[in-house]
Length: 160
Image 1 (cartoon, rainbow, N blue to C red):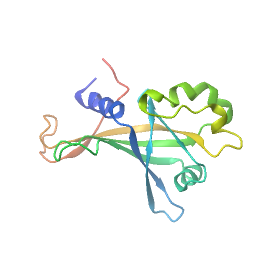
Image 2: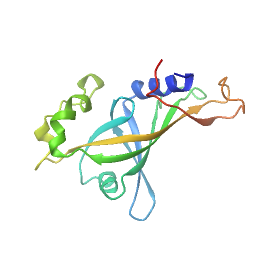
Image 3: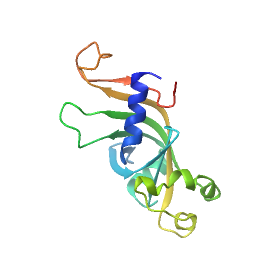
Image 4: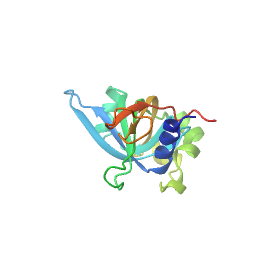
């Protein structure tokens, strides 16, 4: 695992909100902050109404971008993870299987029962599966020879 891989893991594990970047019907970007639960550093779960505009965007165009960052970091000390991902609603037959990893009260999430996320319920469980990952690398970082903040590839699934 490289320093950048470890940075990606730390940011993913250390934050509670991510910003979803979906595409509106007219092609404009839509940015939506949501509370998330990560699994394996590749799957990112959230609960939302299927009527929310970002949910309708996912149904039409599942490709999205995600940013995870700590907005309380001091100026010049920010870190971020940038993900490309494919998102989808969790189908009713899958709910029981994934609910334990998707809803973690220890991360501040409300403990939803499967019946609250299917059938006539107002909410659904969504997952975005990352297809690529980059991290924000400050200009002062030893791996950043350019001296200007940039993005560099990382693999948060790589260990050891």
